[in-house]
Image (cartoon, rainbow, N blue to C red; front, side):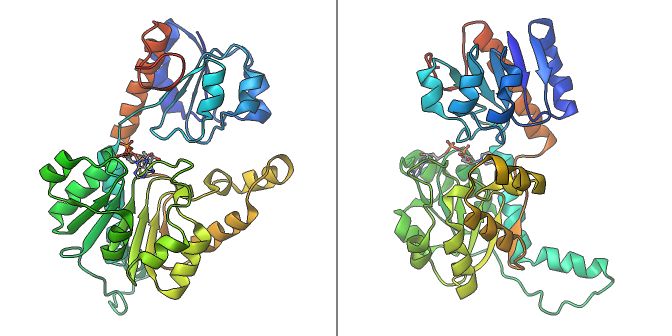
Length: 338
Ligand code: NAI
């Protein structure tokens, strides 16, 4: 199979090289997008991360494409319907970093509850004054987890160790997990009304896009902390800015932002001015968030540990081998399910 790998670091290319005895592989640091897809017209397989945009434009330029493997769990950057229509199989990495992302959630939360960035910045400047650094305990606070899949359950499990009260909401509740981990399901409004900390762990779909907007913020307690490590589009950033300004939200820890692919690189913004349609109002809101003292943003790095990345590559190699051997694995869309 001719495989084109995108958004790839050199150490990842080294790991994927074990496929070279069976396949022709090319490696590309840039994402795959409509503008460069024609350069890869002979690809039968593409392997991407989340900043590639696999939509009708890309698919039209890749007439031989049979399989898309994304080195991520989330697949909202891939137009599944368009792939299905073309008979293209889409594979993901269903689980590789549930503990990893859950650990990052507590990294963000402890950064907020213990004012860690300010405290560390201060001592780096040689200033040991504790003034204004007072934080709050997690013990006894109520955590509301939205989405009790693999990551949400890990978050609930870790929260138990911190002595937090734990509520959860999911469209498809898992009573066995609730029993085993000792948390309680509530509907979304009730969870938002009781939680001191809300952490998001649902995928971004048309149904969940903007789930945390003006109405949801109105339901929340005053002084709530919001953590989002799932997808930027779950939160209406304009409503979040308002909620931060009014004090409804005390602080936010965000690993993901809407329009994140653009915000990652200033050069992307410039390019996008000429090539793509973006929501500039949202982009501006992102930039305001980036500069707020009570907003703590990480660059979509919640999954980024050596162990998790190795698990991603192992599953991706197995996905590509499986497809080539007519035994597709981790299929999220396509003519064959498994
Ligand atoms: P999962 O598929 O195991 O769990 C998702 C949960 O959301 C499921 O329990 C499902 O029933 C629930 N759900 C789906 N639609 C819903 C709706 N409309 N309303 C309420 N609940 C709904 O996924 P996992 O592994 O826990 O990951 C969650 C999300 O985290 C992923 O979709 C991805 O976007 C994001 N993620 C972020 C990473 C990062 O580095 N920041 C890394 C990995 C995943």
